[in-house]
Length: 308
Image (cartoon, rainbow, N blue to C red):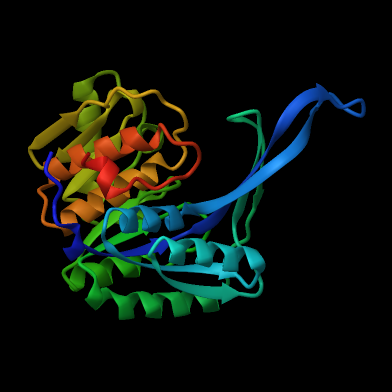
């Protein structure tokens, strides 16, 4: 598979960012105070999560990437910005003093056994979200594709207007959805739900033909050019008007699926913004996902390893 020239890709990422933190230790005994493991702390790691992970994946593939989002006025927001800037992402964070930067803290026992996850999150204020919309509009002319990464944390309250403005500006719009109100994504070019997310919206299907009927109905209702469903070990299915394209999952030793959806939409958007046809872009995104699941935690897939 020949590597495309991704330097022409200019991606604007907007959505809910978070700081993924990992505490590693050894869980060798049970506490005498309660029936829970005692973890002897060894090390910690921090990485970009949510829309921030999408952005760093785009940058790792060679795209010029800008991220617009909201964080708290705290040390975690500063840490997240430093991580992103080191990865080559242009960061435009609005700092909201009334919230904490969203965090997911995972306690890991041994090599990869997750014992506990603690989430810290609050929704940003309307004033900060309004200023973020203004920055989104200002950044539109410099990009050729937009990714709206929805993690349901309140950062995409203006997503309907964002889709409308991006389409009016002639930009490709890709959405990674969340929740059960998909009407807010109407008018996007491509949407990338996973199998469980799609089932929540269209109901359970009994066969491939039933799945195709339900997926195409949803695509038509939302006015999408394409609906890409990521299906885990079953690969991916791309639904367009009058066409269905399936790609099998690459056989890999699955280590950690967290952040795989971020990698998929980042690779898909970067390839489309580089002039690659959508079916080939899906093949490349599928390969990127296969590489990601062999890595622990949220991680970026680089261009060199993708086209090696």
